[in-house]
Image (cartoon, rainbow, N blue to C red; front, top):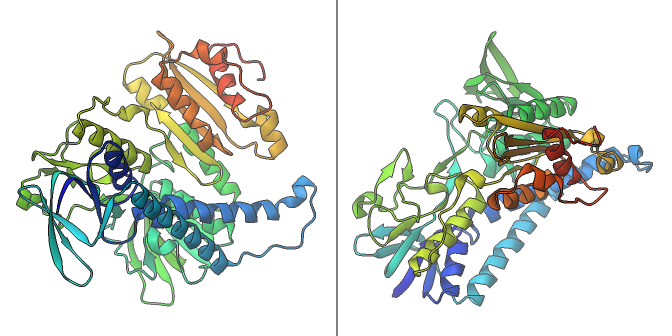
Length: 462
């Protein structure tokens, strides 16, 4: 069968690219080996947020007295929490099935492999193979949990994020290796439900890609919540021969042994580029990623790649944006290349983290003279009323032209606030324009206006 576009992978890059292709009048098919929606909808973004919501509800109940509400002692039903999360994921996957039908996109179930001559070979679950052709083939095969050489995952005691979402019972203790978004989200979830959690982070700060002020605040908040944190430390080995795990951790002061039920390896993701036919087709890769240009052309004409398998940030919304740009270019439109310096990052632990653009350290390294404004939620009326005073908004401006270089937030609901900054940066908004944009009172978002005012010595509520 011949198509205008075949997309291999139906995650947030693949299914979005397919829908946009169909909207533009291209005959489109999607190849998927597991579940529509990919990792994000089935094992990542969506079901993890369902787990985190359950943890947040449990946390609210346990602190109800602080809001003047008397409750009986709450008990978390771990199996029911997991079941709810899986139900949410299933619902989202069915939603993608509906979108495929609505947009007249053919769904081909099986494992896809590219071949020379604009061909895709699909191997079905029963072992049968079929070949398809397309003018344009888009690779959107995503990523998986990275396995460290000295931390082999057995799926039972040493696990990745997929197993962490469906454990048969709640562990009494857990060591989380890595404090990126996946690590701190699961650390918060399990600790809130009563698991004793220790985070081991190789870098000197937790959430190491974030601004240092954010890292320090999260460290304080997590320690207050009873989560133990070991930075500048590395897991050297795990002994799983006994009932639990004995984890050997190398720290600045020497070796330590941690005992726990489960070790969660959260040391990032690795691209799914094996057995895709890349070498056979002549598609170039570099450092485990497919090499593409600004419109996602690979080294071979007619073959494209988007999402976690290319060099940008491994985020669902990046994959979606890349998919749309890629398809619009294929259809003869003139899309703008993606600005990778204006991509928001969100982490959904509690307190939440959201950021975009330069950190203070990176802005200084880039040679900018800075104006920095910071507004703590402890000075926010809405945050006080909500009982969510931890955290702040930090804005970084270029002192010369007033350009908003970066924003860093930690606190309740900040993942819902960061989009304002993304739009402001896209429109090249200056600090003075932000100060003069009236924000509603009382809201958490007022902190953005106040932080801008603080950078220019005009802050009212500090």
